[in-house]
Length: 120
Image (tube, rainbow, N blue to C red; front, side, top):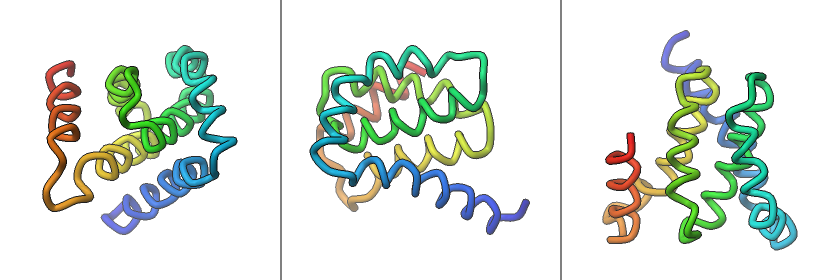
């Protein structure tokens, strides 16, 4: 597909993550409570399970970028980016929202990005 198709897939993938990310305090609390369990599912043999886990973990990162496990979750997401075009777009979109939305990223965001790149 052309560039328009890739953009549409990214918008769809990010829409799913954004719906979780902006869902409010109850969802945020659930993300905190279950992120460890979901991280285990990101390595499942089923692509569908990995995709759903990736969406949830993306929302976790967007809601809790300061969490002590955030960089481990980002690294897990990065490992799944080659599973499918939709997952790649979700991971790239998540990272873009985390680290590249501001003209001047914060020192914390720059450190997180460097940690993920170093771990790759």
